[in-house]
Length: 370
Picture 1 (cartoon, rainbow, N blue to C red):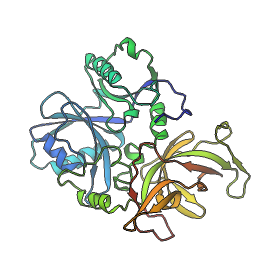
Picture 2 (spheres, rainbow, N blue to C red):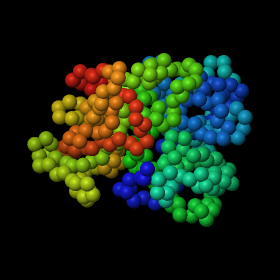
Picture 3 (cartoon, one colour):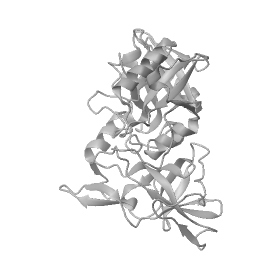
Picture 4 (cartoon, rainbow, N blue to C red):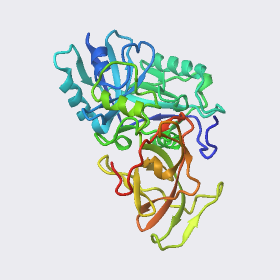
């Protein structure tokens, strides 16, 4: 599927300054991670794995990329820097007597993202992945296709101060800022890190981790596994992260003049979405007078928010009484405040969502349940 033509950004390589890196080594490393995270970590000899770690109530504590280092029983984890101390504390808590050593190496390595926008599909080609891997390995680093979506390109780790000599096939890549990576993933509705997945406040399926290859439903037990499996097989995911874009503004609040735009119109007169400054609380989102979710993060006029599906999507009933949510309601108007203005937002269904049963029993009208 073609990427949105609204993003006129070049192919970029961006340093991700909000990421931290820790190494885990020892004979029990892979089994330890396999038993404490949502994905299968047993066989990662040649690829990175995206996973998450839950609390006993089945809520996400943090997401992580686990990467092989080429050394037996040693991996590197790419995590959100803002929760680095909590990550080490959580892993130490469950390590017990396992033969696992952990070390923060954020002062020695940096994380980069290569996003290829030359392909018509937006997907990075296998040849491009190989070329990037070779260039990064020649500079003492490592690189892997992003395990979530091919459209997210290649994720790389490089030693601090390393210089990379790109081959001719990659010379079109431009050095970009971190916001360019954020805009790319937000446009596809991909949450990441402590702001989009606030610690202990959301379930993995609400964050689409099942659709981003971060949850294995065939592995054995792990912390929080029972509720995750029950939610999956009963089809009761009532909220999900969805991409949002500003479509209009009512200046001065609810009684002000509405300035709406048509598809393809200029956006220059519209204000930016408010930024969510902390992981503790997002910006409330409403439909009418009812709270239907919260804005988690934003850049410019693109954002991502956790929304109640029954309030913003159409559904069709299927055998057994469950509901399939199929598309955004044509007349839905999601609102949030930006200073004294009311922004009108349009949620959209990410192209990578797979059709499936969501919802279950309707929630009663009233306060949004976070």
